[in-house]
Image (cartoon, rainbow, N blue to C red; front, side):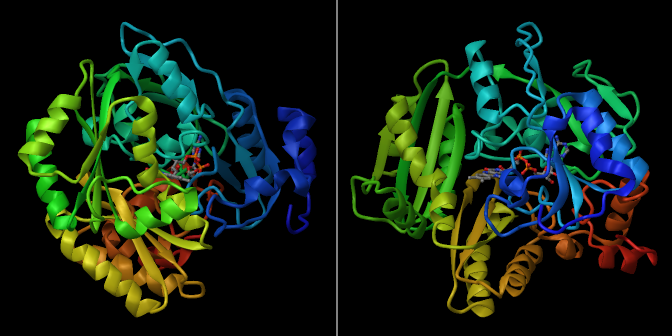
Length: 471
Ligand SMILES: Cc1cc2nc3c(=O)[nH]c(=O)nc-3n(C[C@H](O)[C@H](O)[C@H](O)COP(=O)(O)OP(=O)(O)OC[C@H]3O[C@@H](n4cnc5c(N)ncnc54)[C@H](O)[C@@H]3O)c2cc1C
């Protein structure tokens, strides 16, 4: 488990009593994958990895750790990109992957109840088999858990149509740092009885409570799909086309932006052929439409009307998936080149062109020999900035890019959260009053700072604002 840790008050034995000896892991050969994040940038150490089976056991683990005063880091599928699920200082690592109960879809309400450890792909299949869609999709669907998606308020490919993960959550059950269980699972779309704790826990990155169960909204199945990959001269042309498609296509579900550098990285990483009928363009837009009736013709007509003729269109699932691969495999292709600084920002659409140029220039200033690969979800002005070759200069690269974003009134974390990667940058886009209020909320849930310490809040930033230690 990295460094040896004292075992205060027989913590390991007490945890074994709660979850069973087989579910308290200490062997480094087994725990290694829990202690390193997907990017390889964050590595930690923990006293042990604990895998409870249900809410009762999660409650027992939290109460036990609280009694001994040992902090806990929460983990779902460990696909998060800001280090939030990686322990740093010898916490207990609480993994939710055994909470996999999945109830039958309630067809009348269009809702389903899922354990926090259910993988996104499993939930998607479960919903489809019952004639529904789940409104969230991300490239990490095979590993990311529903609890992690809700804890990070994940965005992804379908925000344009269905909103972020928070908009899919109608209820949840969570365990507070002292082991108390709070449950709001009735699934009432209308319920204004006091504060909306469900919405607050969504996006709280495991700093307020451990989410154990979710009641989720489902949407009518849209089984007929068409995907177009379009070559365009630049980002401004993508924005212009996006506006025209939005006007004409009620079936529009996704609009993904990337550039030729990302395309070429994926092609050489995955051995994929050049995908467009015409010569290479600088920028690519991937568009997906979905409905009950086949949207291929309306998509083709909309592209023709907009004069977007360097396009490949696919309706069958295999070719659609192949086109998506050019966009979805960019993170994997970039990762294969080495350790990557991953930033996830958003700017207002009217600033997207300028901000993209300024971000490239900012990376050039901070690390002249590094290069930034930009791609993202066009509708939300959400750019993933993946910087390759900036080892040793992660901080200045991050600072320079985030300052550009803040200057445009953007978000320094559009999707992935703040985690342990970005707490010190919070003041760029949140006022002192705002951060102090968030810290008071954190203290109300977790007065002893036992849950996901170091996530969202930088001790120095908090101390500077409140005059009291923030660690
Ligand atoms: C290839 C790839 C593509 C991705 N694409 C997208 C994308 O398009 N959009 C997007 O938003 N993200 C994306 N991500 C990031 C990541 O998949 C999401 O953040 C996802 O929601 C994390 O889920 P997880 O189960 O892996 O959570 P983890 O990584 O295990 O945890 C993430 C955070 O949530 C907390 N947490 C996890 N489970 C719980 C719980 N049950 N209760 C309380 N807190 C919890 C953790 O402590 C941590 O702070 C991508 C990642 C990869 C690797």
